[in-house]
Image (cartoon, rainbow, N blue to C red; front, side, top):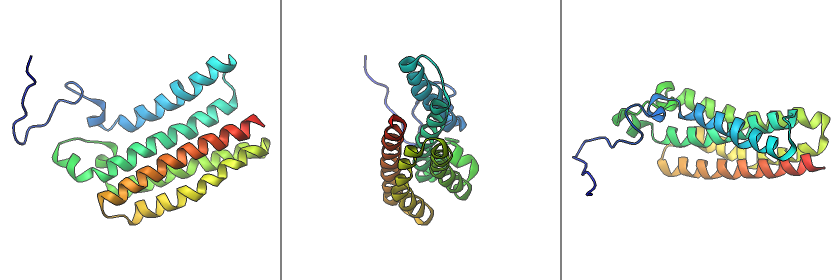
Length: 172
């Protein structure tokens, strides 16, 4: 069966009649998936219960996952407007979306700080600041798609570093 061809100016069908990414719900879906399914679900399977660590870790990793999507959507605001894709970044506008992005990448460090009061080794996760500060600065002052791709990469690395350092802190 041949694939349908796209006419110039047509928008491809990327998820049915009403894809949630076009309704501005992609960020929320990513957050919920990483909090409830990926992190808390894995914790439940491994330890047979949900504790405060799984809640805090789930929220932190959900924020990082949503922040990666947010910076990608900030980069694509102009093309998404043209394609009638109403992502959260399009709905909010660039400046509020950048503020939300910065909040999403810094809140996990606040979470690690609070948990670190009770479990001091969790404070190792604070080393993620070394990646988060440059990501935030480049995001706020960036103008080109290449700069936003750099932010996307740094944010992904920060999420990985945070997750590993958090796990190490929780293990001790």
